[in-house]
Amino acid sequence: MSNRITDPDCLFCKIVAGQLPANVVADEEKVLAFRDIDPKAPLHVLVVPKDHHADVTTLAHADGATLAELVKLGSRIAADEAGGEFRLVFNTGPSSGQSVFHVHGHVLGGRDMGWPPG
Image 1 (tube, helix red, strand yellow):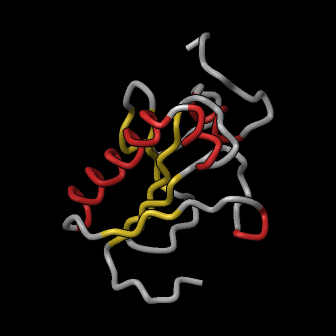
Image 2: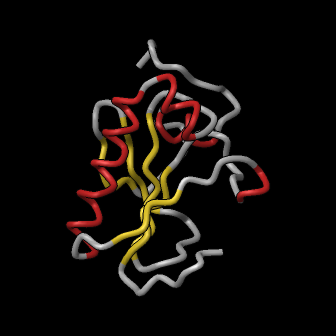
């Protein structure tokens, strides 16, 4: 884990490092999934890369393979817990609702989702 890109002030980096508790759903080599502490749907899991990247576009440019693994893990969790139907949301920037600046995909499912989303 010492070769990981981390931010010592980042909440999700601390969860990845095991310094803060989380209800972990899956722990893969490059990505971690844990339940959101304020769920907005019956299934609400956050999937994060273990390396620190501020947002989804930064991750896409730096490590597209890890972004693909993040999406695959979100899909697998949704298949296991919500019949495979889900919404995957990435907020990028404060005006979009991003409050933790470590990229994370919100895997939402288990209920009908309205449109437009917000």
